[in-house]
Length: 113
Image 1: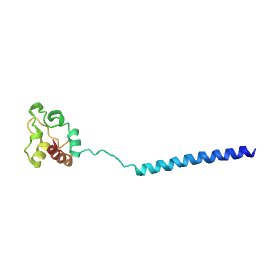
Image 2: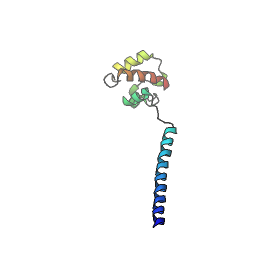
Image 3: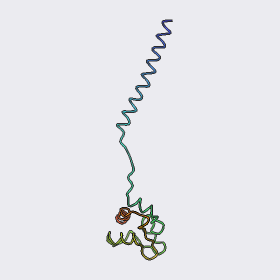
Image 4: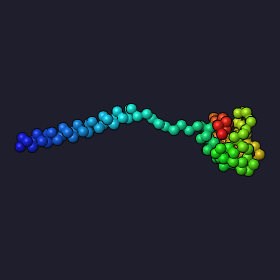
């Protein structure tokens, strides 16, 4: 009878130790593991949101519907912002689609194409 009690007690200690130890290890691993979060350029995100790639392509060189090659633009940021806001030729205005911050981000993103 004593052996059974000691055996059950020993088994409980082992089980409790095993559970507690893994929680502590998991907690340490979570604290030590660096957080890797992909940072998406806000200009690229807004470019995607406005579907600029439909006519200009992801690299800015698509040229559908006589759209400009954005990778070769010589326009200032202010000129780009105005065209994105108000549109030009066959290009739609995006002031009702994108926030002023998103429009500026797209205008700056074009330098990366």
